[in-house]
Length: 282
Image (cartoon, rainbow, N blue to C red; front, side, top):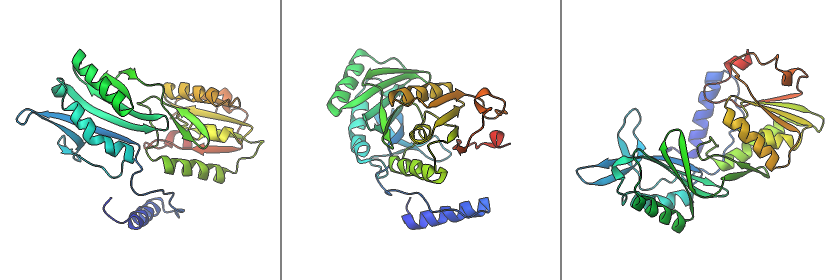
């Protein structure tokens, strides 16, 4: 992050070309600062100073680097950092806080607080007052499986003229500007025609699938996480798209015999997670 933007892009492009042994096309980029719409900040109570640490963990360590500002965050989130620190540092449950997530959606700002012991009524009231005063949607996570909505509606973000709802814990691209450009570039490369039948593998909740459905005759989205399949179906209904269907499948297995695959496809979009797509490519 401390190298020039141009040098970063050239270095990463050259490294990718070297690893792939293939020419790399133009880097899809947006603004170099103030772009990240999600942050997860670790929390730790220091008994000696009776202070709450809030920041990011060092690489390969459990130590926390205190963060008071973060210029890659969107301005709305960066401005919240000292206020969040002050609020959380005033709670009785300071010793029992795991992390706090901040998310900037089109619908507004979200705060998700992971706590490892029940919150007192006083603490809950403080958090609710804080969320109201800052205009935040507040969610509490007493464990990794539970998410309690304290205030706010289902969050959503705009993607190429569509509205995509998501759960606060769902994966979304952290760079909204680059996401818009990626979707537009995918549509350009695929050159989708009105008669095309398109397959989107590892489709998530429809980030590419739904924009494809605005141009193609039909689109099939396939995803390995059931909750994201359900969210994709919900987003299709929300946007009035009736030519798209979502399926839950293990994409590490042979999917060519599935009923949805029998008629073939004119175009395929593949956007796997970091683990890659070795199974489906075979």
